[in-house]
Image (cartoon, rainbow, N blue to C red; front, side, top):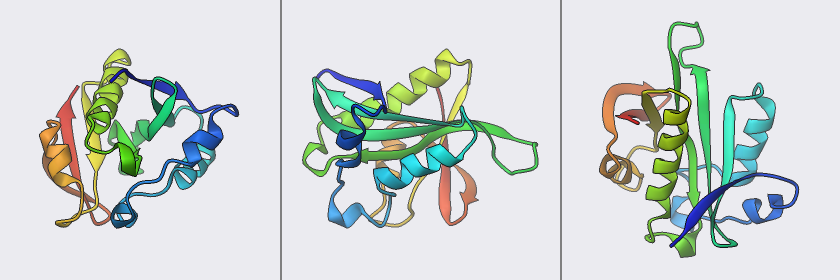
Length: 152
C-alpha cells in the first residue's frame, strides 16, 4: 500500500465523485459531491478536500476543516476531519487510518495542536474506528453528533 493525497482538480474530479461507500453507511456520511459543494460555498481556506489514491487508483476522499469558528461567536477556533469516504471495495485496507494521519500531519504542519472529528452516533456509526485512531469523546455534541479530539 502506497497511498497519497491529491488536491481535487478538473482532471480528477470525476474520479473523486465516483467514490461510493457501502450502502449501509450512506446515512452516516454525505457523498463526495455534497462535500465538494460545501467546500465551494465556504470561504477560501476553510475546507481542505483531497482524493486518496493508491498508486493511480482512487480509493477514498477526505475533507478537513481548517481554523473554523466552532461556536459561531469567535470564542473557539478548531480544525479537524470533516468528511471521510473510503470506497466500499477498499475498506479494511488501512486507507481510513492513512486519511486520519494525513490530516493530522497537515494540521501539525500548520501548527495546530489538536484535531477534531464528529461522527454519526449509534451502533452502525464509525465511533469505534475513530476511538481506535486515538480520538477521545469531548462530551460535546455538534448537532446530534458526538465530538472527538486527539493530539496531532
